[in-house]
Image (cartoon, rainbow, N blue to C red; front, side, top):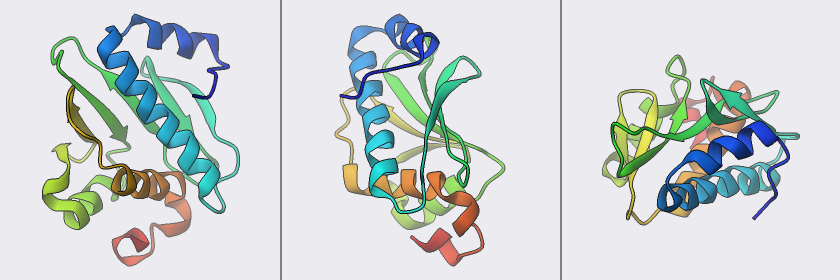
Length: 139
């Protein structure tokens, strides 16, 4: 697991319930691993947006991960709702994921994460500005 260098981000992770924190740290690591594995991504900034851990690249769209007390058994990966990302994921992966409108992939606490497919979604977000013109974002 990669160390969190931004102390404000680390503080947010520490505030999550332990069982959710471990799941969100898995999503975080998937984002960081996918960035390394994906050509053209480059540096990923880890910061806070709307009080949640967020991951930003020069050629991509922001990815946030988080948990809400109003839905204590769920956590999510959020995407910019002004992009074609989630609509494309719905088309390509249909019933594989649970979605929240056009902004998030939502996981139940005990869901098994479909790693390969989620990494494709992450790669699409991290490189969004280079692939937004492609049919189905090139997935």
